[in-house]
Image (cartoon, rainbow, N blue to C red; front, side):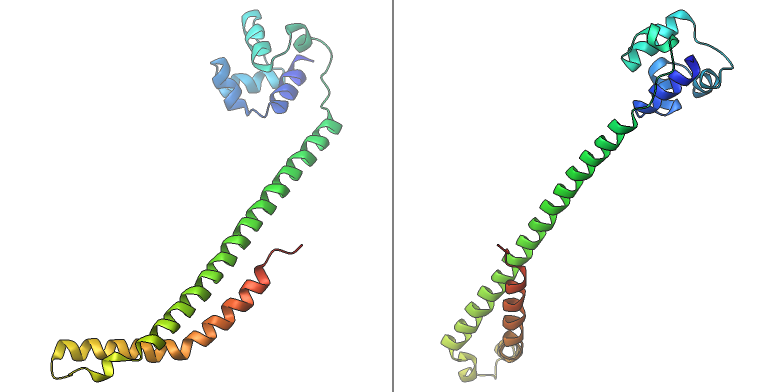
Length: 169
């Protein structure tokens, strides 16, 4: 009875033989011997074991302690429910972050497009005899050329993404 009770209570507390040994200041092999019935703890050790398991010595020495399978299933279902709710919260947070990132892309694309339109390519009137101005002018022209061709695709993809990630009611 004692050997089964020690093993059952240890498992119910979620302790390994090593962890229980550390709590009781004995080696893992001692716990193993108790659980196999090859040796028994002395009276002082029984008190220590009962304190670790939060039970009485008489319970340790008494009848076999049954594992509560119904309670285990209930505990598992409660844990799964908590995990599911945490996963849902994480999914919603990720969706929200993507949604607002796409809105930011749209806003930035529109702002840059309007800025380029209002500036009306001032670099076309620059004197390109100065090498630094020439490099800067070519860089600005390249950016504008690439942006004007890519911006519509970025805008369309962002708008589609915004529609797909919006919160469904």
